[in-house]
Length: 130
Image (cartoon, helix red, strand yellow):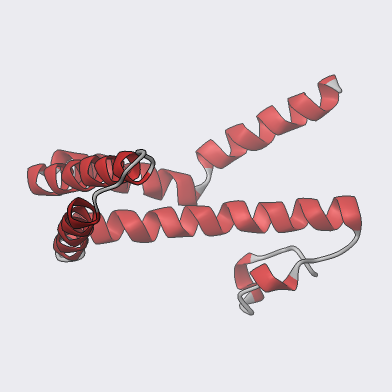
């Protein structure tokens, strides 16, 4: 079992050195340095948390839920207008794609099957089915 954890640690370290992770980290740093981007994202997270709490309360107020949902939509629209947030979203998507590809390879190695639902059709960055 120690070897499994050692290899997992090595994979984690390789991920931290990957271009996708480094790009994501740089995009996060840039977005957090942008006061408008940082505040808009913080406001969105706050509203999402409030909505989550409200939804799990004993008697959720539909008017308050609608208001929070509308506010979140407005903040989401605002974030899509901030270049640093868009770049961060793109970088996160690229990193998540890498993680998905790793999961596909692991699944294939362990089960011998490939989940083609996760395949995007472009094999240039995927080594899962070659």
